[in-house]
Image (cartoon, rainbow, N blue to C red; front, top):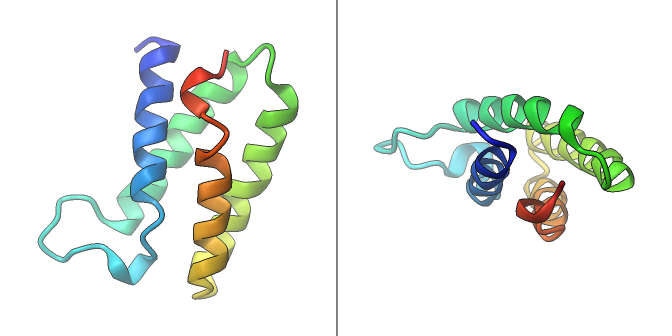
Length: 95
């Protein structure tokens, strides 16, 4: 998978991640656990390939960890804000 495709998938996973763990529909095939695992896996593939956005990459590292921690502590708004901060970086444009 190319970096462009991986970034696109990462952006899609971010858009789903604004749902708190208890807000994923029971009938859906995407669960909180699978979505968070996708985010971690995709980011682990993207991070080493970034050449120009090193400061933004460090920001993403912090915000993803903040989101995971917040959702686990049932701090839904804090988790959403962290995910949206990453999404609003327009990650599809990273290189």
